[in-house]
Length: 74
Image (cartoon, rainbow, N blue to C red):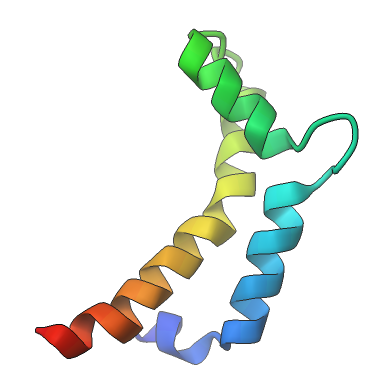
């Protein structure tokens, strides 16, 4: 997981914010796709791919934080 160490915090934060919130109007895709997932309406492969693409930077940010701060406590 050294690639996580090579990604700067600023790049990870910008990616997470912009892709997590894009497009802002009428509703962010991530919110829309999560709502569809909870309601059981996330059935099209394109919607699943869209959820993965918009959630990936947030997952990357969480993994980077866990690797940076969680590893110190162990």
